[in-house]
Each structure stands twice: as C-alpha cells, then as structure tokens.
Image (tube, rainbow, N blue to C red; front, side, top):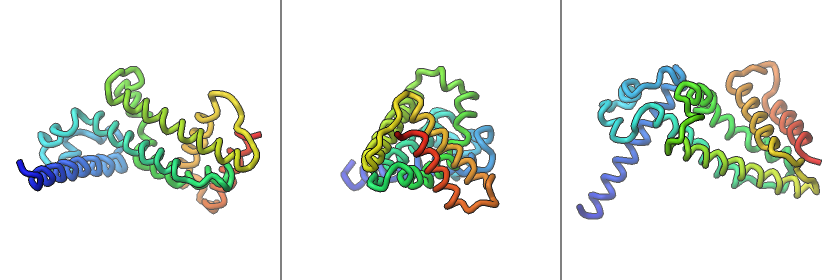
Length: 203
C-alpha cells in the first residue's frame, strides 16, 4: 500500500470512529445511557452494527471513549487558562468547558458506572479513565495553586479540596444545563459561585 492509500485509509478510519462517537453523543442527549445500544448507534451513524464492532467492543466501550475524550479536552483547556487574575476568575473561566462536558457525557456517567459496575472493573478502559481523571485533577490543582499564588494566597490543605471544587463545578453545570435558576442572570450566577468556591479553598 502506498503512502497516499495508507493516508486515505487512516482518514476513513478516523472519520468513521468520529461518526460513531458523534452518533452516540446524540443518542445520549435524547435518551440517556439506557438508549445507547450498538444497534441505535449504527442507525444514527448510518452504518451497519458489524462496522461498529470493528471500532468498539460494546456500548460501554463507546461511552468510555466519549468520557475519556471529554476529560482530555477539559484537561487541555484548563492547562491553557491564564492564572494571573486569581482563583475566582480561573474557576469562572473553566465553567463553560465543564458545562459542555457535563451536558455531553458527565450527567450520565454515574448511570454508566452503576449499570456496568465500572467502579469495580480492572479493564483497560476503566484504567484509562482513572488515569485520565487523575491527570485532569492534577492539572486543575496546579492551575488553582498558580492562580492563588498570583493573589498572594495559598490553597487549603487536604485531599478533599479538588473533589470539592469538582463537585461545585458539576453542580454549576447541572444548574446551567437544566436551567434550574432561570430567574437569575447566568453570568452573575457563575461569578457569584466561582467567588464562593475561591473563598472556600484559599487562605
């Protein structure tokens, strides 16, 4: 196979895989994890079920790939954020991206873990997700430490700090996606919440 043909095959492979993931994301948006099956993904993507199996083992594998992709994108986004405006500004800047992740896959991740017993699995997919989560949290901690330092502050000590911040970000995302606070200006709400989180984790 010459270089041109090899590049074309690789491009087709990547395009098909992308099409499968996009189809799965669309199904999750409408029906949640229960609606995600190889057959529904194949129909949404305009492919045969057999072709789907050439790229993914099962629906759990598809969802895990979506979740992993979202985590990697968010980690890269956090790494690019300026830290010179302080912790509150950093958190507020991260909110749109965490909201995108929550809307795409985060809101059904707990269902996936419970349904597939992922928390007790030692499979490669779950191991990759654990490593990705650790990397994401490490990047978030580094960004917060840098932002706190820019204000002459320090982060509070303890293993609960990053999970606490993450829970706050996911709560914000849930409120925004589901429009729970429809009487509030979302920009003001994000700034208020980010300021509250910042005050809680610095000294």
